[in-house]
Length: 379
Length: 255
Image (tube, rainbow over all chains, first blue to last red; front, side):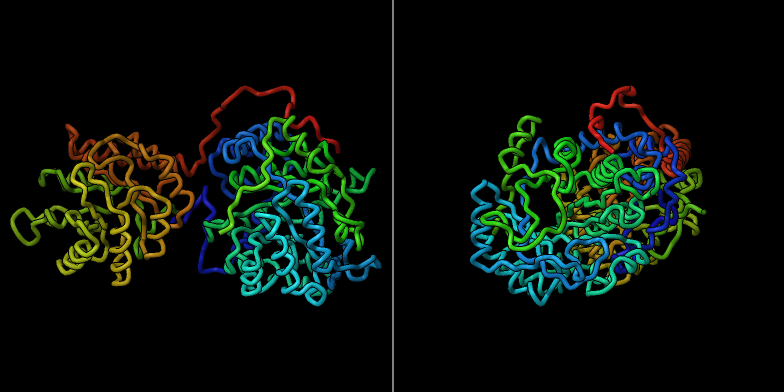
């Protein structure tokens, strides 16, 4: 191996993935990048960690248009003119974690609920009638209320209606992922929220989620358990979003490198800045910064999926899909249930784009994109 | 920081490997010297070791020998040739070449991986010669290869980096030194491979068939060094299109 290396992320397979990724967390001072660094990175076929950091730097905000132009070409090259549609279904919102930023946190007095298997079936049936064939099943993080069997059975029911089933639940053991995979799910999303260990500790006051490493290694366990793909992401704005997006990118890249068969994708949840507080916090993630992160993910891993949820407004989602996002949710409800009948439990956050599947589909056609409902054959 | 190439237990400061087939022996010593190379290949089947015109007499002791298994048609034959090379005192480095296609002389990646696995377990420093294929290269990593040697073009063709995009995949994805081998016809080809990020380049025919073999060996040395330096310097921008005043893709942002 080389002693000097300027273009590759070298993955040392003898080291745990987490050590490998986190050892780079503080590698760059984002304020030190210049316009020339950004433009040079934009000329590269493959980004080095340094190029990637340059694209996430404040200097790159002045070059968003160039980044967008290149991202659109890359997205078209790898995904054609398609956009996949999916919707989330929350089947329970019980949670044992105390995370300071989350509406589901265990100290929050919200209406808690859990769907029965019959209710899950009705909800899924109702969603499937809209034409969707990809579903994301979510719970709050409570092994007591939503055990592996419960989540697995929900996936089994989903298998009757959907070709692609993802889960976004608490991190599990490898064998548990294997069990869920046998039930029918094949995609696991776990978001690290922040890759800054100190900040992570500050915002995760209690509950199993306070175990940073266990969460970090969830994607690897999922892949070892036989899952087809995994999603990574940081909750942008919780810590230094540039560093967190940098680490999330390296995390995804390292996973893909170590497990080349895996489909790795990104999600980009953000904490919205307070209105009228724009000048105060350099960590605020406005639409400009959110787009910058999405474009950087795209340019780092041109082949990776990027999802855009209904946390963002329609006008934003419509423009990023096809440019960098490849997956767009539609008809989303973020309370417990709510597709077939009224939601049984309260919502995790407020959605900003209430459009249904057919409205989103019309938007995609109008933008010259082809909606994709299924692109997977379950064996 | 010193820019050294590590392969197995050894470090090299030259990134140009010279093949010694196709030379007249009297030019070999001067070509090796002028090329600055620290690693030369040696076709065991052609070397008359211990006999008349022994090529080892022309190779300085400071240069690492890379015997190759040319002539092998299967993994088993390659393994036997490698063991023989070691017995004859050629050291632990071995370039695996398994070819059973006499028209194009394309290497058999599968047999090569099998031989690599066996020889790596026996303590050889194995450098397999392959068609540039990402999946085969991953197998070679798992098999214990010390480097991967993808071909740039059909051997002896002097056509240059025909497999550029496939070699780039190996450079980007494989955590072993990538030594571009075969098909390199001119110093500019070698330079291009190095600019792309290859760790080293091997040439034989291009040097051996030059009008002035020794001068060409030197030209390759300079080209490889130049390409490496350019790679480390980080190539500048090549403008694809003129700047655009408006923001057709990002005008929608609301902060």
